[in-house]
Amino acid sequence: MTQEQDRTVIYAARFLLPVSAPTIRDGAVLVRNGRISAVGTISDLEKDTPDAEVQRFRRHTIIPGAVNAHAHLGFRRGDAPEGGSFSKWLARLIERLPEKEAWTAEAAVDSAREAVEAGTTFMAESSPYGECLPQLAESGMAGTVYAEFFPRDIGDGEPEEAVDFIFQRVRELREGLPERVDCQVSVHSPYTVDPESSRLAARRTQELGWRLAVHVSESPEEVEFVRNGTGGLADIFGSNEWGGAGLSPVRYAESIELLAPGTIAAHLATEVLEEDIEVLARTGAAAAHCPRSNDFLDCGVSPVPRMMERGVRVGMGTDGLWSSPSLNLFEEALFAVNLHDFDGATGLKLATLGGARALGVGDETGSLEAGKWADLAVVESMPSGMDPEREVLEAAAGGGVVATVVGGRLIYNRAEG
Ligand SMILES: [Zn+2]
Image (tube, rainbow, N blue to C red; front, side, top):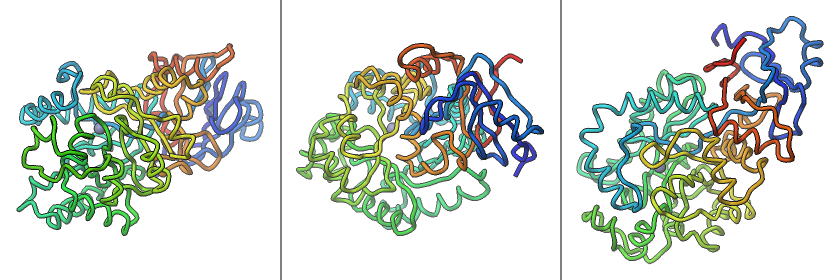
C-alpha cells in the first residue's frame, strides 16, 4: 500500500450523488486506506474525524467514477476509417493494422488519459493479446484488459494450441500488475474466432472462475455471416468457413457456451429480438451498450430498455476512437439517455453502478458506499432543476470533470484551490 493511500481524507462538495442512495447536500466521503469508510454531510464527517485532511470542492458535485464496460485504447484520434458500414470500416481497419503497430502504444496512453480526465475510474479494455495492458496499468485507473486471440495466427491454428497459448499469455501478463488491474481472455467475435476455439476458451474461463469478453450481434453483416455464411464479413474472412449456423448471433454464442454470468457481451445492437433477450437473461450474461459506435457504423439500436426490464445487467462502453468520438463514458451515457428517453438517474446509474455490476465488480466500485473503493469523479455542476442527475451528466459529458479519484488517490485534478 502506498503512503498516499494510507491517509485519512475527506472529499467534500456542494452535492454528493452516491447513486445507491439519495443526494446529500454539502456531502462528503471519508476515505481510509483507499476505501470509503463513511458517507454523510461534511459537518458530520469532520466532527467525527477532526484529524482528516479535507479536499473541498465548493461549486461541484461528487459522483461515482465512470465504469467503462467496453473500450479499446489503441486507436488514435483523428484518422478513423470511414463509418457507415461495419464491413467496409473493418476492411479498412485490417488494411491499416501493419502501420498501426508504430503508434498503438502512444494512442493507448492518450486514450487512457482522455478517459481519466473524463472521470473514468474503472475500464474494461479489449486489445489483441492484451497489448494495451501496460498503458491501462500506468493510467491510474482500475480495470481489466481482455486479451483477444486469433487462432489462425497461432501455431498451426489448432483450437487446443491457440487456447493454451492465450491462457498462458494472460497468466504471464498478470505478473507484477497493480492491485486493481487484471488481465482476462476475450473471444473477439463470432466471425474471427472459430467455434471450437471459442468453446474451449469459454469452458476454460468458467472452470477457472475467470471472466470473458466478447463482441456479439454488433452489425447486420455479423447477423448475415452467422445465419447464412454470406455477406461483407464472409468476403473479408473468406477462409473462416464456419458461418451459416442458421442462428442469431446471440443463440449461436449460447450454442458455443460463450454466454455465462462472467461474460460481458459488447454491442448487441443488430436484430437482438425478444428470444435473444430471453437467452441473455437465462444465461446471466451481461451487456456493454455502445450506442455512439453503433450509430457511427450504422449497426442499429440495442434494445437496452427491454434487456433491463428482463434483468440483464447493462453497462455503458465507449468502444475505441476509430468508431466513437471520445473516451468520455458520461458522454456515452448521455447519448443513451437521449436515445432511449431515460431520465438522468438511469443514465448516471448505467455509467457507474450498472457497469460495475455488469463486470462483476459491483461490490467493489460503482457507487459511493462504505466498504467500496473510493472511486469518484468531481464535476463542475451545482444542479438546481427537476432532474439533477441529468444536469450533472450533461456537465460531465461536456468536459466538466475537474478531478478523478481512484482508490482514494487523486489521479487527476484541475480544480482551483
Ligand atoms: Zn469493441
